[in-house]
Image (cartoon, rainbow, N blue to C red; front, side, top):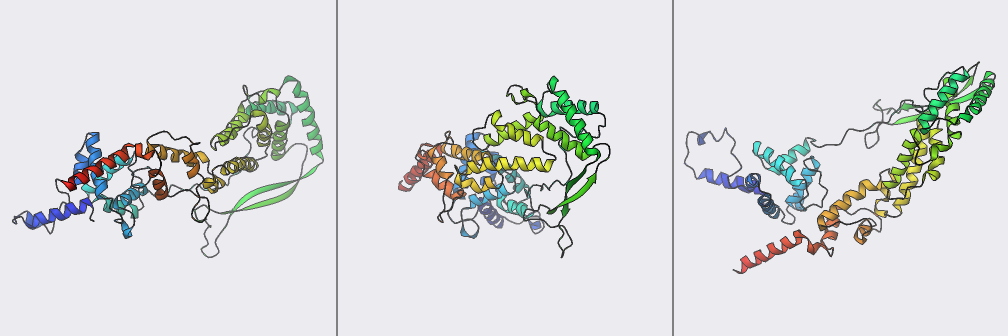
Length: 431
């Protein structure tokens, strides 16, 4: 079955053939014909300004384009193909099942129909052209950060030869880390530890490891390798060296000392939920958000305190990042046992909330009611198994069929309208 715009073009060409030639029509070989007749359904769609009228025009277009197996290659329908192109080129961000008009689809259709008319073509042809040209393509890739980073709370406490300068820096670093200054009686402890370390460093030889990133070069192309997603590939190189200290700390030694001291000697008030601040508060919020985004109960501050201390005491960003990553993996893995269909996505580092919330919105919109996460239907689709017995997410067709067979679908306005339309069609056929 031809698309509405194609039908209109055929009708237009037929009408031109019946017209007596004039000076203007004789230029037909030079001026492209207007494929849109005044009664073209897409013209009617744009001219409809009232909500209900516009919805009825779109309903008629959707019905005429919803003939089974009319899509490319005899698969799906023309309207489903139109929706696929709209989403691929970025004209709409709807994620409703194909065949179901989404909340942002009308606005996207307004834009593409206007452009199609301006370009003397139909919407599907123009969208296909846009898709082939890369319109709405992949977002820019975020490449790995290979710069050296230090713990922000201790990065300023470097090269203090005088113990009083170091004491002042430690006090400020403690406030930055915990949102509270050290207790007044703790200064002597820091002074003693600092002086002991200074004396130890005078005649101590230490080993240190420097971690760097080296680009991996393809021997054939002489270019840096990328993975299948376009991420540049690096080789991690650990270089161990021996350093003999003189009469003061090196930059790296001071940083490690202060980070370790901050981790083990925190103010008693630092882990009070009412007063927690600084970097500790930021870390606590991050750990809590990880649980919230994966539908878990966030542990209390006392339980999270050891992890917070480990992150504050980490010598560099790589170490702290690894500690945080392992914690988040544990939370997501636990959630994956509840929602088996998304377990692979969670293992890849995605939060459950980013997957489940759009799905809940889609199901709620389709059934025209609020559907909670603990609803039996939601539990079923989040623990769906394919015919091979493997857990996975439903594809658009499977989700649509599941929704249509839902007991509450018959109560929706969509189902009622379909029943009315069917009755009218039968009534017209019997008349």
